[in-house]
Length: 138
Image (cartoon, rainbow, N blue to C red; front, side, top):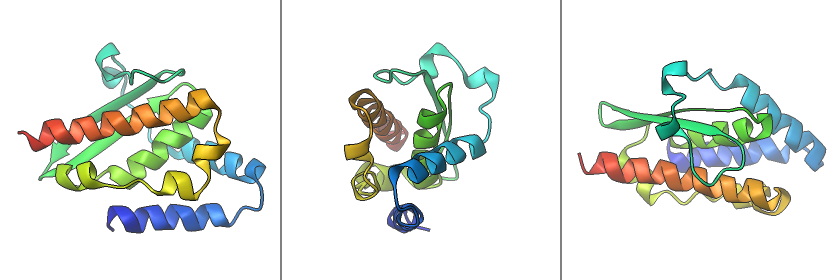
């Protein structure tokens, strides 16, 4: 699936909920389903700067496609990063660099998250795109 197809799928999933209570529960559920990040990757260098909660992000390239693994101590934040991992994993660095992550606005995350979480989400996106730039240069 393309990045946009995955985003459209997430938008459809969020449309199933009538209110933000249901959407938050869904985000929490996504966080619970995120595969556990190996302790060896829970290092200072993998912590995303700009997030109020601790978020670890590990990236690696396999056959020209970038893969992300992440974790957070905060369950909502874990759900947010799980969506980004779902959207951006298994795509080329160029695709990730060029991606317009419109699902964030379309599902209402930009307007319903607290300012600190919204800033943290932006920091996660920035770090994932920075990895794409770094791996593009290899």
